[in-house]
Length: 181
Image (cartoon, rainbow, N blue to C red; front, top):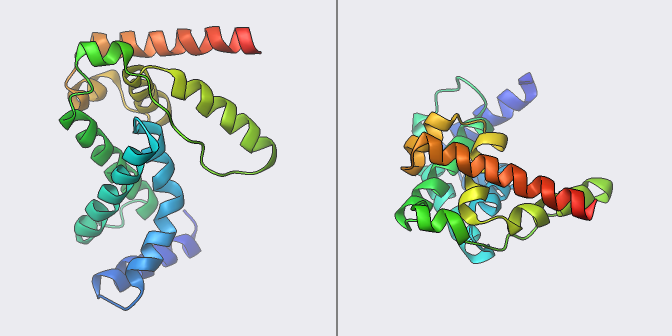
């Protein structure tokens, strides 16, 4: 992490913890571009993603005094956000075997530009077609870097269910890409 980014993050946290005017808005503006897309990936729909994002920001603000600057603030906040999204999904019991099979949802694409936008939209379109359980395990394993053991623990499912969901997600994505490519 660059010294400028480190200094910026230190200043944002310090100002927020000291209660400086406008510090909460600056912190929000700094974190929103990296946290909101996480919520979009995990939520069953746009309304739910907005709720997840708001809850994640509240959790970040409440726990900010626990941040120890042992890595980037952004990385720490992403982990808090993922955990908050998973907590919400777990409370809704979306990880029971029945839910993992057929829970389809819609995820809007965040704004990007040019060629990246086209690729991103295609990927989001394919991911949003996956059943919710497939998509969640795929996000956690492929994008967030969790192990099957960690996914099992966080979602309250077996490791074999996690592996099966990932296998099925990858297979479905490959089939769609072959047909549409």
